[in-house]
Every structure is written in C-alpha cells, then in structure tokens.
Amino acid sequence: MSEQKVENVIIIGSGPAGLTSALYTSRANLEPLMIEGEEAGGQLMITNDVENYPGFEHGITGPELIATLRKQAGRFGTRFITKNVTQIDFSKRPFKVTVGKDEYFAKTIIISTGASAKYLGLPSEKQFMGRGVSACATCDGAFFKNVEVGVVGGGDTAMEEANFLTRFASKVYLIHRSDSFRASKIMVDRARKNPKIEFITHAAVEEVLGDGRSVTAVKLKNTQSGEVNEKKMQGLFIAIGHQPNTKLFKGVLDMNDAGYLVTKPGSTYTNVDGVFAAGDVQDPIYRQAITAAGTGCMAAIDCERWLEANDEAH
Ligand code: NDP
View 1 (cartoon, rainbow, N blue to C red):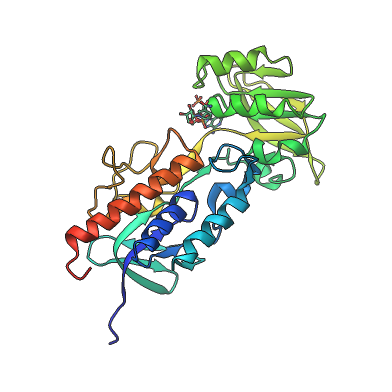
View 2 (cartoon, rainbow, N blue to C red):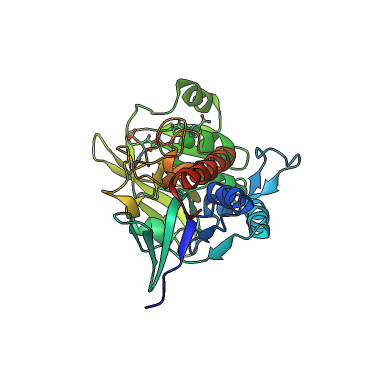
C-alpha cells in the first residue's frame, strides 16, 4: 500500500478568509492545500463594487478582489482543488477530507466555508432567480431603474437593502411578516422616513408571479387575516438572513443555535484541537470581507503555532 501523503494544513473554502489563511500559511512554508469549492470565491463573487476593503481607494469588484487574493496566495505555493468537500473525519489523526472519490489527509484544518443567503423556499422564487428575484441588492439593484420592487425581511439587511434600492427603483415595498422588527431602531426609522419606501407588515410572500421571463407581481398573504392579494412589482429582493455553511460539521464541531461555528474567544480555535475556523462561518455579527480576511490571518497564525507545539515532524 502506498504511504498516504499528510498535508500540514487543508483550507476549506475560498473567500477572503480562506485565501488570507492560504497566503499566510504558504508564506510560512506550510504548503497549504486549499479545497476551494465548485463555486469558488464565495459571496464576493456576486458583489459588484467593494468600496470598503482597505487599500483600494477607488473600490474594486468582488471577483477582481478574489482573483487578486488567489494569485497572491498561489505565488507562495498554495495548491487549489476546485471541488466540494463531501465528508470530513475528525475522529482520527491525521484528519481525513473526502472530495468525491478522492481522500486527503491533514494535520490541521482551517474551515472558511462562509455563509449563504437564505431564501423563502418557494418554487416560484427559484423559477425567477436572476430574472427579478435576487438576494443581493448591491449586486442587482442597478437593473431596477424606475420600477417598483419589494424587499422581504425585517432585519438590518432588509432596511439597508430597501434604502439602497431607492437609488434606482421608483418605489420599494418593505414586506415583513409581522410588525416587530429585528432591525435596529435607527435603521427602521431611516427606512420609514424615506418617501420611496412603503412598509407592508403582517405580509408573507406566497408566490412570485411573472410572464415567464420576468417578475410582474407578488402574491401576499396577510398573516393576521389570511387575506391574499397581488402587488405589482418588477423585482423581489430576499433579505431574510444568512445560513452558515456548516452542514458537514454537524454533531462534531460546536455551533450556536443559528449553526455558526463557535470559536474560543480571541482565537480561531474550535472545540477540536487542530481545527480552526475563520470568516463568516464563525461570524454572525460583522460579516465583512475585511473581518473575514482578518480572522483568516488569525487562523493561519493559530495553525502555525499549533503545528510548532504539537507536530514533532514539523
Ligand atoms: P436577521 O436575522 O437580523 O433578520 C432576518 C429577518 O428576516 C427577520 O426580520 C425575520 O423575521 C425575517 N425572516 C426570516 N426568515 C423568514 C422567512 N422564511 N420568511 C419571511 N421573513 C423571514 O438577519 P439580517 O441579515 O437582517 O441581519 C443579520 C445580522 O447582520 C444582524 O446582526 C444585523 O444587525 C447585522 N447587519 C447589520 C447592518 C448594519 O448595521 N449596517 C446591515 C446588515 C446586517 P422575524 O423577525 O419574524 O423572524
């Protein structure tokens, strides 16, 4: 039997957190192996202008930022596999990472699988995805000039997206299933003061209606009276939160109620020794590219020090 190769570190996920971990671990000569996923790059790949990533005075597009970070990590020897991890075994050392038919082994793992936007789960929502339905106002808002659109949700994201969309749309309906908002008061007040935003509370989206090519209206059900009516609009933005990509780690790594990985405060240590988490997968609060990159750097340094202390062969 041929001897299995054991990597120093496997990084799972390729947003700013994973790529920063790759940059740091490759510069530390750990020769990281990154399993970047089939949809490599994460949420930034669907983000148009990134104006708040320090160092880019005039902004940069999400895909450009990812491409630059990827090249920077590759320059120091990071190897990439553009596939999804299908299984992980943390019960034995080295850890085993399965990617389809292939198996990889590693002394340490950095998890940076990020988070994905949540959807309502309606078949019609899926049908009109990219043709009027979107989960990213920043990415798609500009396609909705001088038309009426809706935003679903009652959190800060929904308020922010509704305000942002008034730059383009003639009217924005803020559709929320109750009349109590998780969003901060200041964000709700700002949205309420915006003359282009109309609140529709106690309303649940039942169906997205369209003419086959684009959205024309949304069927809304009053959550108190049960009454159903149609509201004409050309776009619907879903802003009901994010889901961390942690399915692979259920029952093994500690998570909070929302499924975010829990790290030891002030570090990227998970509850399994030698497994670190960085970026949105462990951050329900800040969720910024720069904070993801920051925790990616922390994970790389935690990983380096862990190998230094625990791995005699290193
Ligand atoms: P939240 O979890 O805060 O809010 C989600 C909203 O979506 C809630 O109003 C919830 O309603 C609603 N919702 C959830 N599921 C459904 C569903 N199936 N159908 C209809 N409505 C649904 O998520 P956000 O993304 O808004 O915010 C996440 C975090 O990011 C928060 O901590 C927030 O403060 C932060 N953030 C901060 C910003 C800022 O300060 N500038 C900007 C954006 C986000 P219900 O309340 O009824 O459950």
